[in-house]
Length: 481
Image 1 (cartoon, one colour):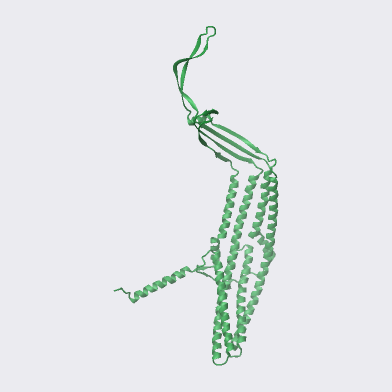
Image 2 (cartoon, one colour):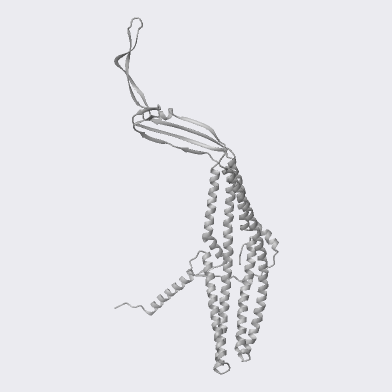
C-alpha cells in the first residue's frame, strides 16, 4: 500500500514549490538603470579590454626604451672535449691528444651617444602611451554615448508599447459599440468592418512596437555583454522631473569647450606630436654612435700540466768536454712527475681584461637615413592634416547638435499641441459617435490621428532629452537621467 500525503501537507508542498519558482524568477530578473547599464558596459565591454591591452603594450614599450639607456651585461661560457689533432689553448701549439677546454668571458657595453635617438625614443613612447590612453578614453566615451542612445530608445519603445496597448483597448470598446449598434440596426456592416479593421491595425501597431522594444533591449544587452536570454527590466526614470533640460546653446561656446575635451581631437593632436617626435628619432641616424665597452675572461685546459715531484735517476748525461784534456762534463739526470694544473689556478693565471671605446661613423648607407627622415616628415604632415580634419569634423558635429536640440524642442512643442488638439477632438467625436451623430469613418480617422500624434509626441519627448545629452557628451559632462 502506497503512503499518501494528507491534504494540508500537499498544499504546503505545492505552495513551497510555487514560492520557490516565483522567487527564482523574481531573483533572475535584473533591474537595469541607466547608470548600471553604463557601469556594466564599461566593466565588461570587450572593445574596451582590447584598447586597454594596447595601452598596456605601449607602457611596456616605454619601459623598454628607458631600459635601453642602461648598460648591457652578457656572459658566454663554453666547454668542449677536443679529440685528435687540435690546438692546446694553454700553449697555442698543436697536440694530438684529448683535451677538455673551458673558456668564458663577460662583456658589458653602454651607449654614450647615438644622435639622441635613445632619449628621443623615450619621449616618443611617452607620447604614444598618452595617445593610447586617449584612445581608450575615446572608446569608453563612444560606448557611453551608444548605451545612453539605446537606453533612451528602450524607454521610447516602452512608452510606444503602452500607447499601442491603450489604442487596442479603445479599439475594442469601439468594436463593442459598433457591434451593438449593428445588432440593433443603427450601423451598417461597413461600419462594423471599419471598427474591426481599426482593431486589427491597433494589434499590428502593438506587435511592431513590441518587436522594436525587444530589438532595442537586445542591443542594450549586447553593449553590456549579457546573454540574450538574460531577463532584465529597464527602469524608467521619472521624466517629469527633468525640468532642467537645456535646449539653448551657443555653438561657438560649445565648440570651444569641446576642442579641449573631445577624445577624437585629443587623439589626433597627440598622434601628430608623436610623428613630429619620430622625425628627431630618424635624424639620429645621421650622427656617429659612441659605445663604451669592457670585457673580462679566462680559460682552462686539461692539457696544461705542471711538475710536482723531481728525483735523481742515478744516471748522468754528458753536457760537454773540458777543453785541452777532453775530459767529459756530466750532470745527474732528474725525473719529474706531472699533473694537471688545478682548475681555479688556471682561471686565476689566465684571467684577462679589456676596456675601450667604439666609434661608428655613418658614411654611406644607401640613403636609408635620409629616406627614414623624409618618411617621418610626410607622416607628420599627414598627422597634422588628420588633426585639422578632426577639429573641422567636430565643429560640424557641434553646430549640427545645437541645431538638432533646438529643432527637437520645437518639434516637441508642436507635437504636444497636436496631440492635445487631437485628444480634444477625439473626445468630442467619440461622444457624438456614441449617440450616432458621427459615422464610423470620421470616428476612425480621428482615432488614427490621435494615435499618430501620441506616438509622435512620445518620440519627440525623448528626442529632446537625447539631443540635450549629446551636447553634454561633447562638453565632457557626465550623462545621467
